[in-house]
Image (cartoon, rainbow, N blue to C red; front, side, top):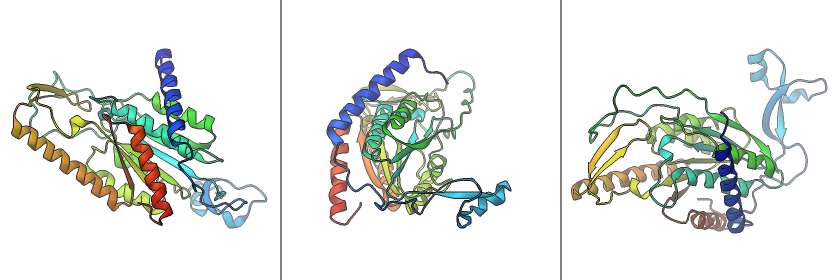
Length: 329
């Protein structure tokens, strides 16, 4: 989809500013990011390609050969290179914010920080981006007062954007520009399916980063995250807006669900309603944290009303300190 010149210029300015901020704050904090330091082709499995005369037959990829009826060999990747994959959730719920940032801004900022931390010395970074054209949201059980006129239009069918892993800062910048320029579509991304794309095809051991607000049902993505953690180091970056945790006392408030277009009128002057909302939000966030902890994933929560860069600096420093003490979580 072509990007308007004004949007492209804004995206370029945002990426440049974020890279400058990240470089100043995070440079040098990540150490020991290589799986190994020995020279040679390595032993970690990479992608498959067709067999050529002279290839080592011990590296035949028999499943692919059987499926395609053409001989294939499995290439190997040097162990000294780190491969990082991002699962970026850009559902319609991410296009929301009531403080300093939109949640979408924090998603792009997180991707920029991870690219800076991992792309060095030949390391590679790739991404899969969900744009909201996934499973439509379920009908809310209560509180909804009014629906838009006529049946809602079906969400446009668009495949998940897959950006292959490539080495180099120039390629990483191109990946970030693509993520920042991605158009958010109506509907909800199937977060579980998005995460599962990092498991297929099987990739060499590396780092997997999931960036989302995790508002999808926990049972839909908990198992894919746990499966991802069997082979990779998993980092879950959760973006949160304060209005998702508690409601202010501002009288009657009309809210619009960005994923369905439905309108919702809430009487925020009711203290019982505000308390019930805060308790439900707390239970939801606690369930998210438990699921990520059970999957063995490192969990970083970024809020739109705080200094996200300072939170990330503290998190990276804590991870490095934990690594030196023999723990990783």
